[in-house]
Length: 114
Image (cartoon, rainbow, N blue to C red):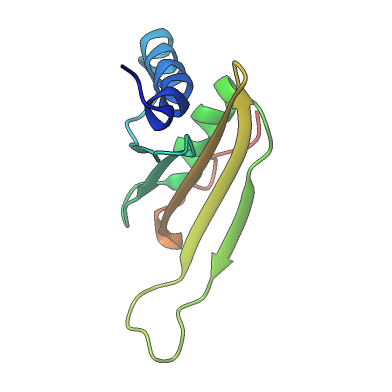
């Protein structure tokens, strides 16, 4: 018998299988589906251009991502950071994508919006 949390997870899981099957060109992300059906994908790698990865997902999912840059704080040893977030609905399933990298990893020519 299926529990209610399993039922809530079925739509996001099915949408993810469809997305990855129909668009094998999309870069891999870390995916998470909570027991209540909240669904997210993320990629936070210092040397991966998060803007370019997000651009590939925007082509398929649509929507307009939010972009942010955050300078290194005085008590931090790391470089300036870049982050981008997309909330989009694909096949009636809400997708929440979050990506980040060192700002120096951004390609000058990458475009986030399709």
